[in-house]
Length: 493
Image (cartoon, rainbow, N blue to C red):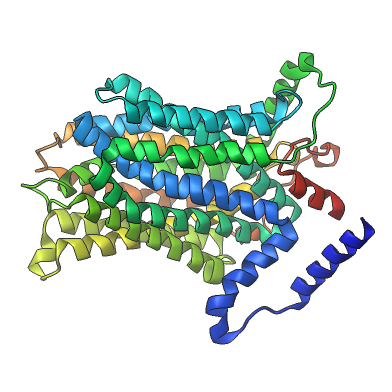
């Protein structure tokens, strides 16, 4: 045991003393060195868990699910764009109520385990829901929505555990908070890039229902994580105290949430997300329309979204290497402004201004998608770092899920608001005369949060630390993360 500790300490010192690769070699060895540094400081199981859940399940699987759902609603269920926007919001509800799943995994162990059964059960739910929707040839819309919602529930339960790991390590390693968010984002972006790149091909070859069948594999990975998870068993758990624990956790979250250092940035996060109306379904229907739109093929649509994933990936790299120490308000000001201006590219495309300059539709939309997603990622990265710092010790996983749910609630409001806008402007499966007006309204609303920047802290989000009156009285967190991660954290204390 002593020898293992000495080896681990020597590795840490080696990482600290090594300045890392320099020059041209950094392009190749830099990412490897970065992964090595995170694996040594946070333990390899943390890095593996983040890559598995964010990269494979949410990135790769999420990309296939998004394109599959788009074509499933359009070609199989044959719904209107405004209706698809509403249904998309409904299926995302499990992500909005993530704190419930966080509380369950924190407070209610199953057969003595807090994490493993939830991983296994959620993975099984994901597999069953994807099989259900893929094997039924004439599935009614209501059952299709229920199946998609169940699939999102499986992903949300797995996500909340990884979020807890990220939040806990952001508190114990505040200097690495930005690195951990970059790891999450880069994994997600790389998985999304791969998923979007192959999604169009699979949609063309096996159809949207066949893609849902493929999604059983990322769902099964969740169960595999639960099977491989090494977790100490809770003995003699007092189930009669569950209600009290729920009450204590809710009280602690409310006490933290009502502090001005917390509710002000949360309010900004919700409003800035809500007012950026989501009209993606209207744009998607226009992309694939043979009369009014450019009539992109399934493969082309997949490649277009993959360029968005590249833009998101570049945004994460840019933030990690250049912008992570910038002032939060300055970052939000410029990214929010540029986000609104980038939306004008959609307006130029729908008005076919690009053709007047001799720029093909495909090239123009690829550039617009990459730029928009890069700016969107740059807008969210500092907010994610700030959210990880707002979590009180002991309920960091659940509280981080609560903060993310506020953003997800903003996404729901944005989706339903966008659906209402498309309905009012009579944008349908075949009518797109006023789509340009919907885009213009969305772009104007995107820059409106600039007047609310006083709600967020001024300084570097990496330097922000939450302080509460009860901090000294906060007990040790009894969250059970990946077992080896807990052991490495305990050793440092």
